[in-house]
Length: 356
Image 1 (cartoon, one colour):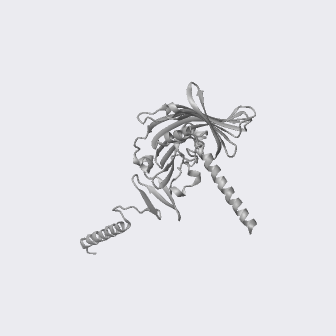
Image 2 (cartoon, helix red, strand yellow):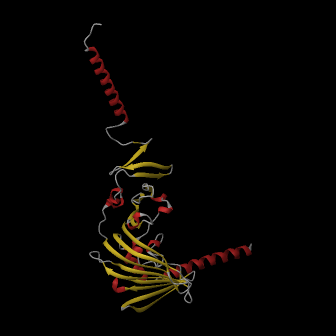
């Protein structure tokens, strides 16, 4: 019994020590990180356009083996977000043309829309789902405020948060020193995560604690990989918020360039009102008559967009509220047939009799 009590006491002390250490690590988050997070969180809505070129390299030869253009217009307003990605056709006569792929999260529904023309001449159907039931293959949700806050290529920011690197609590230690980065005085914040990864941030207090550079690697010496993002910041008017106007992302694997993305950022607005229809089918610009697949717990229902509302479809006919309902059409047809019969009888009665 005494042995069991000692074991239980040892377990309680171990858990208490672990909790204390977790708190201690979290308490070492630098004030500069917290201010950088506060400044970026203060941006609650906006419209941002990104144009970039992503490249993938051959580690053996150093030659480029893949290149992809990136063009995305992002709208966000609190929890609502919409991303319009412009893509080029991969083959055929339309190779020089582009199509738009939209992923929009409104108050309750997620809308996926593409105006891509398929090889058979058809277009992909518009999909509408509840936000909590989004198809993972259609979930392109990400926060455009993450630009410059996570060392990743733009399209890979999905499923990251503002705290993925900056202000991350699972750390062993945090160091801060004053450094000069390209003529700009910064606070270099360095910490080691519990898994051994090293993170460095160059934070500029003179630019509302905007972050000029972030670098992460798996160790200090002979890192297998090192991810870096360098940003040029500009002050947006009239919001007064500092935000990247360009960035360069690189990944080095075993000291060799593996990935690179160079991008420019056009800030159309920050913290200004976003039209509520931005996250609706009308705001997205869905053409009238577009077929709609609405997914719910019972499967998918086929509907169509009439330019103002989504109209239900049943047995191939629209179940819309209009004067030409099935019953009215039936009575109209009956009346027309009756009139034709009546006129025929009248004509027959008025026909003059002739003798044989």
